[in-house]
Image (cartoon, rainbow, N blue to C red):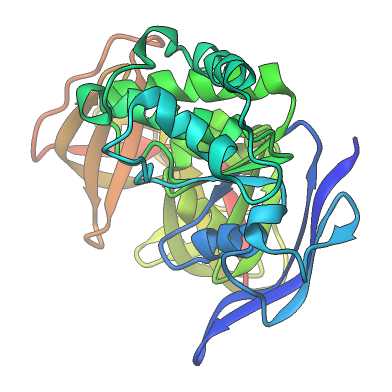
Amino acid sequence: MTAILELKNVTKRYGGDTALDGLSVTLEANEYISLLGPSGSGKSTLLRVIAGFEKPDAGEVLLEGRSLAQVPAYRRGIGFVSQGFALFPHLSVFENVAFGLRNREDDPLQDAAELRRRVDEMLALVGLSDLGERGIDQISGGQKQRVALARTLVADPKIILLDEPLGALDANLRARMRVELRRIRQQLGITFMHVTGNEEEALAMGDRVAVLDSGRLAQISDPDSVYNRPQSARVAKFLNCYNMFEGRRDEGGAFHAGVSSFACSPGAAAAGVYCVRFDKIRVVPLQGLSEDGGTGVRATFITSEYAGPRITYFFRGADGKVLEVEYHLSHRRPDEFAVGGDYWLSWSPDEALVYFQ
């Protein structure tokens, strides 16, 4: 694939705080990349540096091999869609989309027929062909998001940057817009960079997922690799789907976390974090449990949470730690557990991930 955008050792500071810390990453042409990380990890700062709204303190940003250091934001050919949409409330849907073409500094588009053609083409692409004359206060949140996207796309940018674009939408609209955004990107064949703090959204949207941690790139891989093989305990934590036990491995290959011990690969003694994904755990009644019980922990059932296609069960371990077990309803009939009852949470050692410090 061909690189469209390169960041080389980009650093951005605000006073004594470092938002981006020597970050390097390459975006390929015609890909959808999700940018995931907790609040304060530098996600939005990175977008603003790429767009030209912020100047890096060090490093380079190159578009198609050309440095953008002296190129102002409005001449970079980079589109930016914010969470708040930033639409003009006094203009119609059509006029919002047409505004940039009509008022741009270089070669403003004055031909009414060509303007109409280009705006209508973008409205059709985002599914708003019949709403051009509507006011912004007459359309839904999802439709406003599409107007903001159409207004950006009509300028023919080389890259689209989306800063938490689905954050203001309800759950149903977010799910629908995930599909729509990927369809639009595939149809146009340009690169989208989508910032989100939602791990499910990042994994669902991206051809690749980049995980930011304290201004540094912690991992960038395809969604399957990030989900199943996070490169560090901190990446696993950001995914919010792993039970995590801090402890220490002994020289015999056992990992000790408080009152619990788990099977672990042999090696030198070292402190670390033992991680088991929510959906890899089986809940076994204590009655009839074999003597050793296999790898796992004894825990007390607290409550469950229904979330459409899955149920999450919550247990409390002997050390007070809350553990989560996820059952997908398509796999089996949901189990029923007695509140306050004790169970054995079991998993295969091969499915655990262990990170040593």
